[in-house]
Image (cartoon, rainbow, N blue to C red; front, side):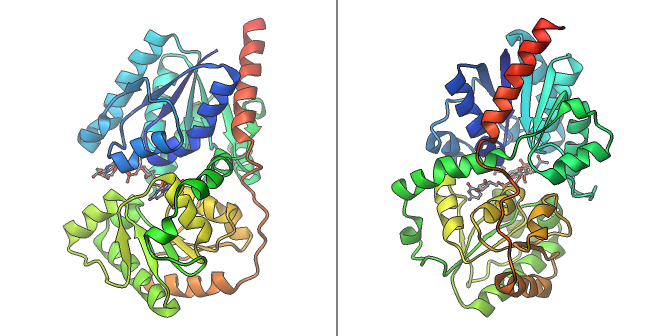
Length: 366
Ligand code: UD1
Ligand code: UDP
């Protein structure tokens, strides 16, 4: 079985890390194809280095090209590489433009396609990612659903049962594999003068939030209100997209929030695990907060991770500044059930085992 692991952004590198390690462990013939959608050192290289992952065999460098040209370029170049490398199976993870391009390329040239983190639905088509998820799921041959809710979505959309497999999410594997290493290698609380369970951690970068000046201003005001109410430090490793938009729209950076550069995974994981509260619009951060048992407010209108909301550990606040504050107060005080819906940390093992078995069977009975 020759496997192409396609990735392109920060969360894909983090969540594919355990898949890559599993391939190494089992001696699977694989290579990494990086689209280069993310390219800054602190959004890309730092993750390969910290998690000791092998460098990508290919990097398409699309991130430096205009946004409108990226998907077309990726599809063309990925097709050429899949043919040249005589790939049997492509695996993609999540819902980015790189995922969509990898999926379309595999589909167009008849290479089998596996999608990890399939079945997530926000039911909000204003999110670019929702279109990418639905399209990828419907052209995939193997669907690895991380949770029971995701499984249900796939069945309800009529996708054939034989394609669907409940794997868990590799983010839990990544947390298990890296938290201990983080605690040995980094001391980010000391670096930023923070105390355990006495600070608030923030991330926000969703296009539908930060590309709209009114929404972004409202979110920043909400963060400032939350910091003022709780009176403890607030740290925000700000995504380059958000920083760029704050500058473009002339939104000022409130002084009661510590805006810092994006961090490596070890540093960020250590911050998450020690935070009193997390405010985010990230998908992966919602999963991590739930896994690490840290209350979370999701500053969006919807989430494709409803499991966390059902357990009372995550509140979807919308983007109104006062609602953000009210949600923060509520989630800190509320009743919580911390059962982890994202799995037991063995998702990558299940995915690679399953793909190897299917490949053997299909070779025997084409
Ligand atoms: C992308 C994904 C989003 C995912 C996020 C993870 C799509 C449609 N969006 O959003 O689903 O949640 O990655 O972080 O695929 N930039 C840099 N350096 C980088 C990367 C980005 O400066 O390494 C800046 C550039 O100005 C770039 C902008 O951020 O134009 C947006 O980057 P892009 O990859 O288009 O989208 P993200 O917002 O990162
Ligand atoms: N993350 C990180 N450093 C940071 C911010 C986030 O390593 O400064 C990690 C975080 O732990 C999570 C992932 O990046 O695993 C989430 O990525 P992002 O929020 O960019 O994308 P999303 O999950 O929303 O697609």
